[in-house]
Every structure is written in C-alpha cells, then in structure tokens.
Length: 253
Image 1 (cartoon, rainbow, N blue to C red):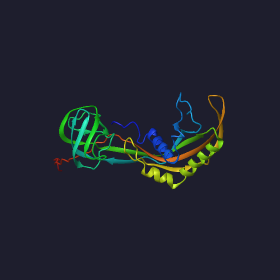
Image 2: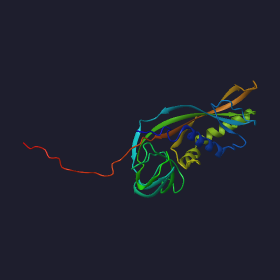
Image 3: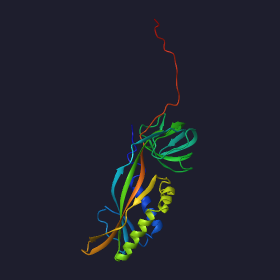
Image 4: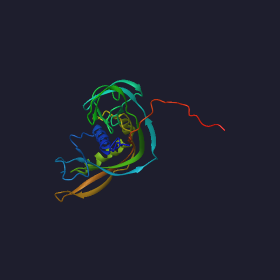
C-alpha cells in the first residue's frame, strides 16, 4: 500500500493561507511577512516586519475515514494522462494513485494540466509510461485528522507605537468573521484547492523585548493565533468493478 506522504494541506500550505490573510489587511510590501525558524535570514531593512512561527499542534478528534472511487477512460503518453470519459465517480484528484491494466505499480497523478478541476482533461503522472486508451481508476482512501494549529505572529518595529498598533490590528481581525470568511473562501493560488482551515481564536497582544544582531534592544508585540485544520493522507485503495457468482456443490447428508 502506497501513501501520500505529505498531508494535504501541508504546513507550508497552511502558512501560505495565513500569509495571504495578513496581506489582505496589512500592506506586506511595506510591512514584510516572513517565516520564522529559518537560518541565515537577516532582518528586513525596513523598520516594520512580522515573523510567523509555528508553536505546536493538538489533535482535536479521532480519524475520519472515507473512500473515493473513480473510474474513467484514460490513456498515457510519457508523463501525460488524458482522461476522456468518466465511467464512475466525478472527480480525479491530484496525488491519487492510478490503476489500470499495464499501469506501473505505484503510479500517481501529480498535477492537472488542462480541464476543470478534477474533471476531464490532461494530468501529469509519475513514473512515465505509454498506455493505449483503456479503463483506468484513481480510487483512494482518505484519512482525515482534525488539528489545532497554533502560530505566533511577532510584530517588530523601530517604533513601539507602530508594533503595538499592528499587533492590535492582527488580533482584532483574527477574532472577527472577517477571518472566517477569508479562510472559508480561500483557494491556494498554486494548486487551486480549498483547504479546511478555520480560525478558532487569537490571544491578546503581549509585549516582549529581544536583542537583535546589532545587540540593540527591540520591542516586539506578539499575537498567538489558533486554527482548526483538517489534514488528509491518501492510501491507495482499489475497488471491485465486477462481481462473478457461481455455485459450489457440497455433499448433502
């Protein structure tokens, strides 16, 4: 059984969504938004910036297991799969396994090239192979876990009033329906996918001090933001597409 090793959404995709939300309320061309825990990354040259750091995550529920069967007419040429007609199901998912007569074991659909999301069109696959048009399948088991993700947003500024005001803006926005509506409709610009990310609450801003690389004391305001995130992994799952029945004779006493 082959697994999709990275959960969807990944932590980087979750942080991308959070960065997009911050950019929707704060001009990040003036106040850069950068990821923490990165080595050899200097402070931005401007006076104001925000650092995002992942703190921890808590499991909120037991696993939810669902199944998705899909069958279609497909053909491959190298790394390109062309899906021309659905037989069963209604969606072909990126990262799903690909099954069919002659399809190499472990083949996966890696991206969509053309067509509506999950619909008929062309996709990339790995590994490359050439297969004439035939019935194919991309069924899988979906194992979903609900998590609480906790991030720290550290607001740095050369003006204590600026950092306080920026932190207050973030705290207010994260505790409002503004955030719920944003994440409820957010689509990843790279994948076109919607992720189940929803803000739970944000703590009140807190002031701390730190010493920078120039050994100067900086005032930093931090906001801790909590999110519920549904992450899913995809074990390969084959489904029976026909049933053969017969009669087995037994001795009767």
